[in-house]
Length: 131
Image (cartoon, rainbow, N blue to C red; front, side):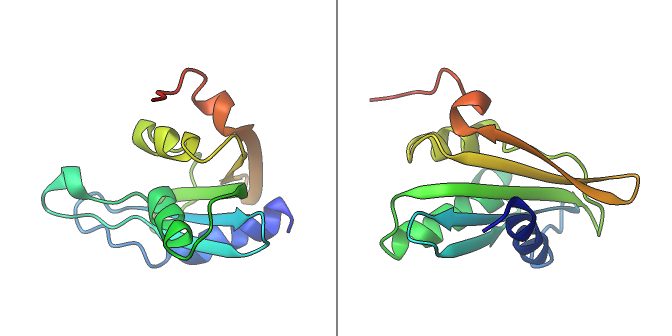
């Protein structure tokens, strides 16, 4: 699966975000080593600390279905239909790092064109916490 295809799936997932407080929608699409894709969106709660990010939603869905090895995750975000440059938060970076050093693709719009920037989990969180 190409980065662009993964970004398109993340954009579709973003549409389902529940963001009554921030208005900032995030979508993610996680590609497993077995070739399956799990999507997620952010879900806000009035007790902000227990809100869920799109990346963790996708990862939990995958793990709950028996997946533990990942190739890539695409992340998109923005208010309404915007696609602004949005990277995973610190909590998501740590959460992702527990499952390996796979590709992270950020999708965003620039001059009305969808662009992408690629990292690895380790590049986003070089000094992750480990037990």
